[in-house]
Image (cartoon, rainbow over all chains, first blue to last red; front, side, top):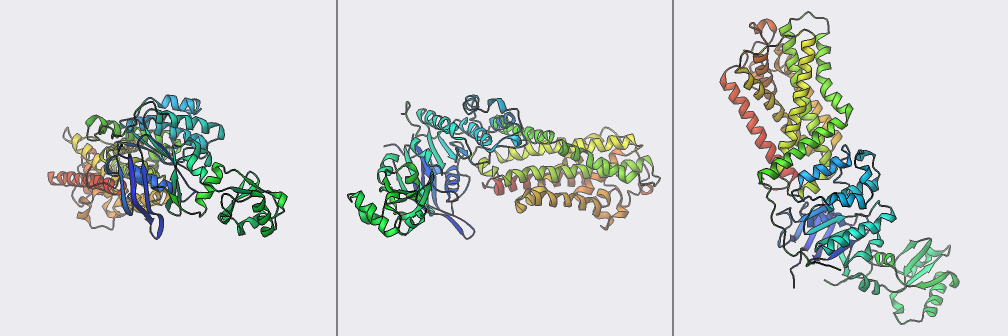
Length: 303
Length: 285
């Protein structure tokens, strides 16, 4: 069995009186693509910063390749949102800066900027870039550093949907080259590229596992378009959430997996006052998975 | 599906102590700092023109002055320009990186903090020299007279110029770290430069305008360097007539040693500050 690439053991992090992480345990296995998911502001970037060695935990230990994460800085490439790009320089000048700065910077940046569609914008000032273009430039820079572990913080945030598959392809290429990736995201669409998912909520890792396994662990989901859909809050496990104009919520656990769907719907319609014909039970999606594990549901952390 | 064995071993160590890597990183920071100023025309014009305009305002107030007196004032004002570049420009570039959380990224890279500091300081020296030179050129164009005392003046002038810049760049670091905000840091460092200039009688070239006791002007970092520059760049004999003395100009070797000491202390303090506060490492890496 190979040694883990990185481990966070009881990691807590506070900023003044504000606790962000509370006794987080996380193991990153060699060669995997781990997607760390959670809502905005839950501490994903902070945890990633601890793994990158750029922040020290308030308590607990973080090790990367068997050494404290802060002890050496030549094994990781860390993409931190909006922290790499220098807006007073052009895109090309940015690349040149990091090329000289990092001894492991490679010529792969040419392929990355071409794939991400910013090759023709490299001579423009980054101050004139859109948020998505800045993210693409930063991703191209971070991905061009040849290290065994990549830590990408929200690499698809601000990107147009058409570019996300390109980014996923970049991840797959890295993984195929034997690299390990930890990617944070609050976008469920990034779940299916992962070998393993970890959900961060309330300062803790509440679930980890393969995407399919975790998806299978999500109970059936109620869906409604009714005007009084908010009534679902009174009966559902966790908070209802909006998806594509519908309101969805997890079927209460008291019904169990074997419960007759028609009976469940009839009961819930009566209990909530929502018209029975406006209620349905649907198969969970990755969006439901995301919401299930980040809306105060029971912890199913396999670690 | 993976086509290669996952990398389980850490990559071979990248030594930031390697001279080639250190030099490349220092050059990266120098180049980046200079490009950022060049790409911002307003910033470049302000940095270069500010001391020259200050000098012109001073010498066009109508008072009849000698060419040597104008040269002294030009040097004092040129040093203000160098201090302004060192404090404001160096400080604001540092503050931008801090505010934009760039040090979180830098800390995750094998960057030598001393290479960063050296690179930023090299850029600061280039810009400060440019700012100082423009002031001198404007002064010459408006009648001021300069002249080296002799070949030995060259290293003294260089030392005084470099010492001034390095000292004030290091002074900018704690302001930036404590402020944690580019706007506050920029205001604070600008205020420091202007206050130092005014309170020391145009950096020690007009002692009568300074509330500081005369002899002390030969020991303060900004006035010591400025008065050394005056002594070696202004072809005058009667300093009292020019208003530069008393106190007597600091031409003895002990003052050069003192200035060198200031520079060394500044460089060491700067390296420790950057390494510990910005890179969160040991005392010296």
